[in-house]
Amino acid sequence: MSFGVAIASIEQSDTMVTIYGDSASLDNITSIIAPIDVSNLKEAYQYKVELEKPVGIRSMSINTVNVKVQVSQSTDIDIPNVRINAINLDSAYNVQAKSENDFVVTVNAKGVSSVIEKLTAEDINASCPPAIFSNSSFRPVSVEPGITLLTRMPSLPRATACSAAY
Image (cartoon, rainbow, N blue to C red; front, side, top):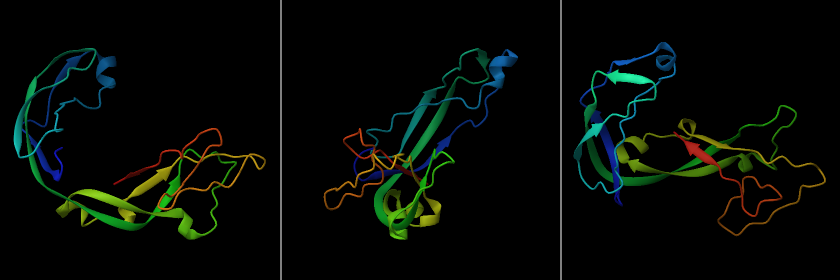
């Protein structure tokens, strides 16, 4: 997307496609991909997209779809007090912090104002894979001001990546 622009809506000419293939192939299909490149999109645009036929599918009822993308000015807001959830944590471990404030972050959301202005901390799932340390290998880690360290593996030079989704 061009700087300052966000996708406001996406509409497609067809929402159903009939696919033909053997039973085993059909059982594994959950979606048909209609890829579009919006990397340089600055204004509304209509794409004619070739559908990607999945492996094992003989034919499809439609092969192309028209996709209309509407754009709007992008804005951003800070959403405070988003709770961080540990993921992929072995049941033998638990996550502890010095205080409740160590379990929350502020998330900066960017997008169409009519969407992001309605977001609350409860709408966002911020998660981070835990770094598992034995008592002998844990060391306090200092970071530069303005950087929040969520987890760190002793063998890695940087903090592990965490994600937030809404």
